[in-house]
Every structure is written in C-alpha cells, then in structure tokens.
Length: 268
Ligand SMILES: Nc1ncnc2c1ncn2[C@@H]1O[C@H](COP(=O)(O)OP(=O)(O)OP(=O)(O)O)[C@@H](O)[C@H]1O
Ligand SMILES: Cc1ncsc1CCO
Ligand SMILES: [Mg+2]
Image (cartoon, rainbow, N blue to C red; front, side, top):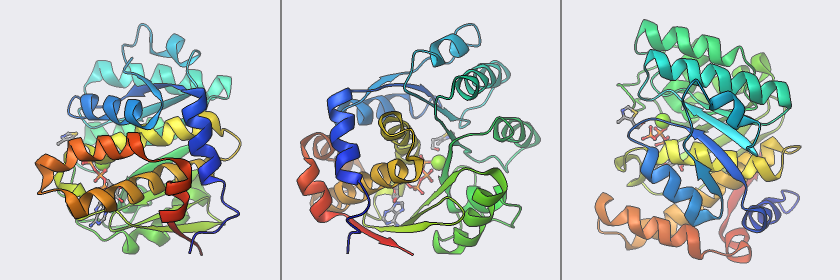
C-alpha cells in the first residue's frame, strides 16, 4: 500500500546519518519526551527558548519547532524571535498550535505566529479545524473531533497559508493544499500518553531539517515513523505507562527497510 514514489526511507536514513540539530521550543510537559524521541530516532534536540537567544540559536539549527502548549508572555517573545530568524534565513520551522482556541491570549499568539509563515503546521483534529475557522470540539489540549472530519479544514488551511498541514489522530492526513496523503497505523493508547503529539512535531522538524526542499515528504516520514512504531508497540504494551519506554526503544531500533515495509500510506 506504500507509494514507492515517496522517499520516506531515504529521509529516515538521511536523518540518522546527518543527526540534525533541531531547536525545539516546546511546552513544559513535552520537554523530556520530545528530547528523548529525537535522540532515539536519530536527531539532536536543543530546547532553547529564551527571548535573549532563541533568534540567534535558530541560525545554528537545521529546523525550528514551536509549540504553544504552556504559554506565557516571555515564551511568546522567544517564539517570535525564533520564527522571524528561521523565516529570514530560509530555515524550515514547524508550528504546533496546542489548544490555540481556548483563550484570548492563545488566539492572539497563534495569529501572530501563523503570520510569520511556518513551513508546516501539525496539530490534532480540533486544533486544525479551529485554525481553519471551523467549529471544533476540543477540550483543553485534547481533540474532540475525528481526524477524518478535519481533512477539508486541513486542505483549506494549507491553501490559505501556503504551507504543509498535518492533522493527526486515528488516521493521519498530510496536505500541501493540492497533494494529500493518508497514513494508517499507530495505537489508541497514544493519545493517553501526554505530549506524544508534541514530540511528533519535533520529529517533523528533524525530518524537514534533512529534506528542506520536500516538506510534505518529510512530514509523512515523521508521522509514518510514529504510525509504524506506535502500531508495533501498541500490540505489546500493557498500557500508557509501559508504552512510552517501549516506543523509545522501537524508534531507536527500527531501520529504514523495516520502516518502509511496514508503512501504510495512501496518496489520495
Ligand atoms: N486513535 C488513535 N489510533 C492510532 N493512533 C493515534 C490515535 N490517536 C492518536 N494517534 C497517534 O498519536 C500521535 C499523536 O497524535 P494526537 O492527535 O493525539 O496529538 P496531540 O493531540 O497533539 O497530542 P498531545 O497534545 O498530547 O501532544 C500521532 O502519531 C497519531 O497518529
Ligand atoms: C497536558 C498539557 N497541557 C499543556 S501542553 C500539554 C501537553 C499535551 O499537549
Ligand atoms: Mg497537541
């Protein structure tokens, strides 16, 4: 079922070979799991977010990721600096709009960040629907909408912002507004592990760092790696507690041949 025209195996191999530096401006909950996911998968994370250095550091990184999960005023200032520096230098950056619909503070921050032209936006179904202006049923950081129901919103958002949009859930969907791809796999246990989606956003950064000219394919590679490893671990884990360490081990152990042979993607 995998479309062999997608270079997902090559992007995974390149990530392992190049060990890209990824500046992850993420939330307080996600820091640890996100850094461990990148190290296990083969990238080099750095959680550098202060206003005083975030812009300068972006110039050193292969990609920048920005996540508004635990937002505060100084945090927004660092995000602004990093996003501006990345866009100015042509460094790809990824935006994770965690619960952006919940408060006026978040709505203002996400409007400012999206206007700085992210290369890729990755969120859950409710986040993507609300960003596209649709009514969404998210509760705090958790999605209340199905991923399928967010596909039209993702396509509209990609066309409006001229970026890649990825919506995750039981089936993942990635689009540039013209080409769209479904990714099957994962496990229903995954949304019971906090910040696993935030960690995925950082992995999208790691993949696009080594394939900056192919942001759609890089996004499919990161989501596909989570889908393949998540499905495998979901069969073996006892629950959310044992899922997390087994998942890190699986991200570390999988090679690109195993990855491609278990990847289920469909070009729509
Ligand atoms: N029901 C499900 N079945 C299979 N995989 C799932 C399911 N729900 C989520 N996933 C997978 O879990 C990962 C995270 O996606 P999710 O949409 O839950 O992110 P999120 O809501 O942003 O997470 P968080 O905010 O906790 O970091 C993705 O790889 C996704 O494919
Ligand atoms: C639980 C939680 N609260 C703010 S960010 C976050 C991590 C999942 O998005
Ligand atoms: Mg999220």
